[in-house]
Each structure stands twice: as C-alpha cells, then as structure tokens.
Image 1: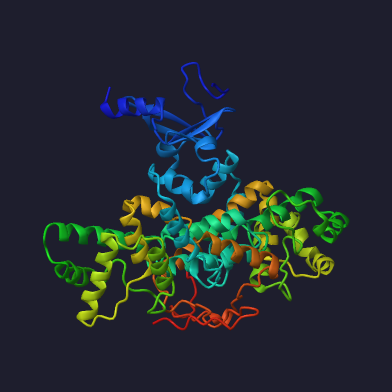
Image 2: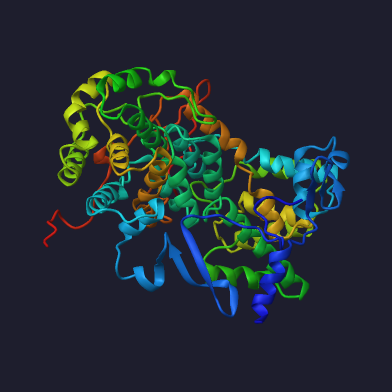
Amino acid sequence: MSSKNQQNDNREILESRIWAEEPEPDNPFVAAKCYCAGYDVYGDLLDKVGWTEYLYLLFKQERPALVQTRMLEILSLALANPGPRDNSVRAAMSASAGGSTAASSLMSALAVGAGQNGGAREVYLANKYWQECGTELPKWQSCLQHFDKEEVEGIWPKLEHPPGFDPYGVTCATPIRQLLSRLITVCGDESPLAWLEKNRCELEQITGYPLALTGVAAAAFFTLGFTPQESEMLFLLLRLPGAAAHALEQFLQWKKYPFFADKIELIGEDIVDYGGAD
Amino acid sequence: MHKHVKQLEEFEKRWRTSVGKFYTGERVVIRGKDLHIDFQDADWMKLLVFSITGREFTDNQISLLSSIWVYSSYPDPRIWNNRVASLTASARSICSLAIAAATAVSDAHIYGGQTELRAMTFLIKAKYQLDKGRPLEDLVFAELKTKRNIGGFGRPMVKQDERIPHIFKRAKDLQLDNGIYLQILKDVQGILKNRKYRIAMNYGGVVSALCADMGMSPLEHHAYLILVFSAGMLPCYLDALSGHSEGAFFPLRCNSIAYTGPSIRQWVV
C-alpha cells in the first residue's frame, strides 16, 4: 500500500508551511536549525521576539504589526485565568484535588473549556457570525434571532443561547466592558471592536442577553484576522495558565475541596448521603 | 554513522508487533486470532482481557471481571471524575471529551488507577516476602513506617466500602475466592486488626488480589481497569446535557471564593 505522502524511498512525508528543519551532520533525526515561517528560531528569534509575536507567527506565518501584538497581549492576559468558578478551571481542580495527573487536569480544562457555553466552541461560532455579518446590524439581527435554527455541526449539541452572549447574565459585566474598551484604545475607533461597543446595547436587546467574554474574544480574534478555527484553538490554549495554577493550588486538597455532600437528590429514592470527609 | 541514528533508521522502517493487524477489506487479526471468526459470539469483556493479556480466561473469570466493573459504575456527579463529565456537558461540550477527560482523571491518587496499582504492587511484594520465608508482619509494618499507608487498604470519605461484601460473594459463587493473593489480603487485614490499626481493606485491594490470582500483571490489571468507571460517567454526562439547563451544574457565586492572598495593590511601573 502506498500513499501520495510517501517518497520514492518509501518514507512518509509531512507537509508544513509553518516549520522547516536542517539536520545535524551526524544525525538526521535531530535538527540543527529550526525555521518558523522562514525565521531561524534558535539562531535568530530567541532574544528578538516576545512570546505573543511568536504565537502569531506560528498561526499566521507572518510578523504581526505592533497593534496586533499589543491586542493579542491584552487578550492573552484577559483570558489567562477565568478564575476558580469557571467550569474549565473547576474541572482542572477536580482532577487535581483527588491527586490525578497534571495532564488529566489540563485535559479536563480543555474538555470543559471546549464547550458552547462559555467555551471555545462558542468563540468559534461567534467568530463565524463575524465572518458572515461583519459590521452590518441587520445581518446580525437575522443571525442572532435564528441562532437555534442553525444546522448543528456533527457531534455538537444543539445551541441553547446565541453565541457570544451570557445566558445567565443580567448586564454586561464590568471586566468585559473594560476589556472591550482597552482593546479599542489599541485598535482604534474604526475597528469591528469599536462597532461592537457602539452597538452592544442593540445586540443585547436582540438576544435578550448581555455580551459575554466569548463575544469580545471572538470579535478580537476576528479583528486580528483569525478564522473561527484559529480562534477556537487560541481560546483553548490561552485559558490554560489559570487552570494549571489553580489545579496546583488544589493538589490533594480533596478534604477541603467542595464535595456537595448533601446536594444530590435521587428522585424516587431516599436521599443518598455520603457524609463528610473523615 | 552513530548507533542511535542507525537504530532510528531501523525504527523508521517498520513497527514490529504481534498484537494484530487490519488486512483492509479482508480480516482483522488480534493476537494471532481472527476477530470476526474466533470472537464472533464473544462478549466484550472476554475480548478486552484477551486483547490486553493475550491469554484466554474462563467463563467464570470473565463473569467476575465483568462484575468488578459493574460494581464500580456509580452515576454520581460529585465523584471527581464523574464531575468532569457533568461539567463537560454543563459547558455544552461533547461526550467523547467528557469521557476522555474523566477517564484520565480516574488515574487518581486517592481512588481509581493509582490505588489499584499500589495495591497490586504491595500484594506482589507480600507474596515475594512469604516465598522467601519471611513473616508478613515485617513487611506490613515496614510499609506503614515508610509510606504511612498500605496498598489495598484505607479509603477516603468513608471507612467501609459497600462493594466489598458483594464482590466477595460474587467471587465465592464463581469459586474464584481461593487464590493466594486474596488470602494474603485477608491475612494483612488480620495483622492490622490484631494491632488495633483501624484501616480497612479497600475495593482496589480486593480487585487487585482477585486479578493477581487470575495471573494478571500490574500493567495488565491497570489496563483492564482503565474504563472501569465509564458506565457511571456516561449517564452523568447525558443527564447534565439533556436533563438540565446549560451551566446548571452547581454554579459558584463570587463570594464562594475565600481569598487568602496578599491585599489589593497596584502594579507600579
């Protein structure tokens, strides 16, 4: 059996527009030089670029403009720790409290943080709206009003609220407005983010829900030129630092960690009570 | 050419395995047997333990191995691994991610994978000790002194393990309760009781002993148990997805965080 990614000598080939390597003279399996989008990572970039610029380079294979770097820095900081009440961070802590592995903490944060309710899939969907609607309010109106009529993509559950809005919010939370306004001071009054700030109340009226962090993140990713898929991936990645730190804080703290001991009500049976930790 | 490079060049060429192969459009070989012929009417547990060990187990053994799984299928979303499944659904993420993450979480220190591995490691050490003619007491107290616990004993939250009487009964009914490892486990319990230690054997201890008596190695035993909680996780996910609103799984209010860090301060540049 041969496939089109095999060379004549039967070696498999992986195509990448991101990464190239030159082998060490004595070992073809070890790289002497690594190039990211044409830049020598270890020979040239290490002390010249920051992590955010490198992240952008990896995704886009071109240098970000100063405005883009600053925007991505602000967004990375805003997303880095959703806090210990957030579902994804709670998943990470739940793993760690019982002494599970570090990887299972982050896998849990990813599994939960991948969702359509406050997670990366919501950012993906909201970014899709941006691609479709841009800064045209009537288009947004139609999209948001018919969010639940959208074809569900494969394995994903049916949407229960318009993506980018908080189904349990009352008014747009202070940190979300702060993030939006800080991003606008960097990217300017003509940006999609500025349009979002101007039209926020109208959009919130259409949906009946306040703008959520996922909505600002999606708009920021769109302004930065990221596709829905890229936004989803970045949102997953950028929220991991907080999950990791909180997981470490709760490691083997199961005796103090909330257990909801008497909170399960089994319908049609006596209430099960596991009792407190001994 | 350096020997490591030569090695890698060899590895680059092929993956040698006796585990199996899918002959496209023809048949599937699993450890030397034909999946669709030799296992055409087999239940899944029989295939699972064969795929792990390469050995055939008796019908009674397969029944006991199934019961071990059944007795650990707790659909309770408070248990940490199940909670990850419930949170995944509450966040309206997908089932496979829920189960993958909750399965990874099940390799926990205080329950699940790590406790069972510790139990079996201890039992193997104990048998070795006995084979050398040394008293079991010495090992028990050495373990207590150095590790402050004994593999297969102790349980978080509660002192009694409700599964134990059931699995003992099941093993007895299937005539699989006469093995040396299960006897060692009972002897260790006796030693602890005589010295007034209030540490009871746990389910992991009993399961490890039963599996060791069936000839499983620690790794085989660990692999066999990887999906042991899955029948409890799946309903937790589905219930949180279909039976409850999104975001409804025990939301925490801001004041639920008790902050103990430094006071509020300014970042001065």
